[in-house]
Length: 197
Image (cartoon, rainbow, N blue to C red; front, side):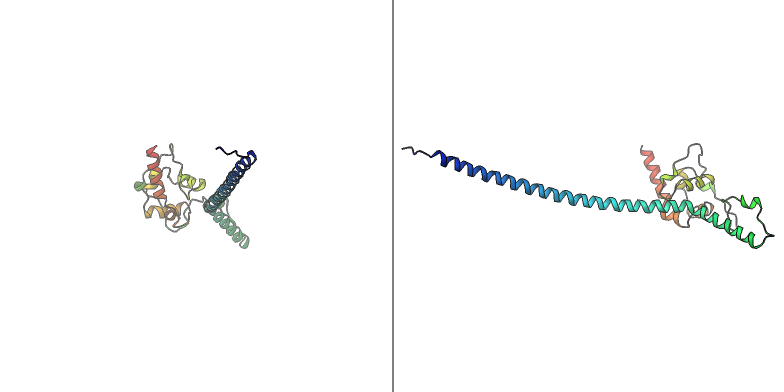
């Protein structure tokens, strides 16, 4: 015989199953959201730290470039101040207008310094490369390199140790900085990159 099932019992059984499935869904959804939030927060924290470290490195490079560019101006001001102090102490030794207008590109060593253009070649001032793409060369240093005849990456690629020493003295740059910043290697990389375009 077929037993009769009480409708109320049937509804309470289905209701219990429904509540069990609903609570399982809510618990699973809540845990998944919580784990996702932890994972996202951790990833964001790691990326934020990487960005901050890169930003700090960029600030250091910017500070070095700025200092590189203003160092010659500081040296000129100090020399000018020393000359004025000497002129005040000895009134008979007043500075002439010609002394004040002295070029900053004159070598102050006893021996004249000349860059051998035979080794690095003559640059093309009509089609200059953007030398500021090399780390350690800012607009001021690029201008000074242009004044002594260096306009292109190809010239920088051909620099040897003696050329680097002469350039360092001519542009009044930090000794050893050109080697440390690896201008030659950077110029070669930029030429390879340009040839692939």
